[in-house]
Length: 123
Image (cartoon, rainbow, N blue to C red; front, side, top):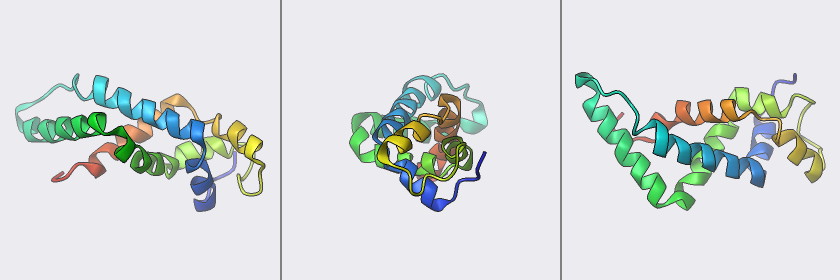
């Protein structure tokens, strides 16, 4: 497995299917994970902020999709999935599509979860 560099990550972020997969992971996170969170007394404000941000995303996905696509493509684990066969630099568009398809759903889901709080104001 190759270690993805920033150029690989930028190429991955441009793949349309990858972008749509990130959007679906984000939608799932906002509609399933956030509402199902167990809320302790100490975490009420955190949950409220996360739930409000999830609502913003769901009501305007076109605005938030590119932000999360960049964050997920910049995740080293996800990018390394795509570069399992080598760097994306110099690949044809068809080869990039094939390489981007190597990213695991689990790794995309984890990258969305890992990045989510970075976008929530006040956390």
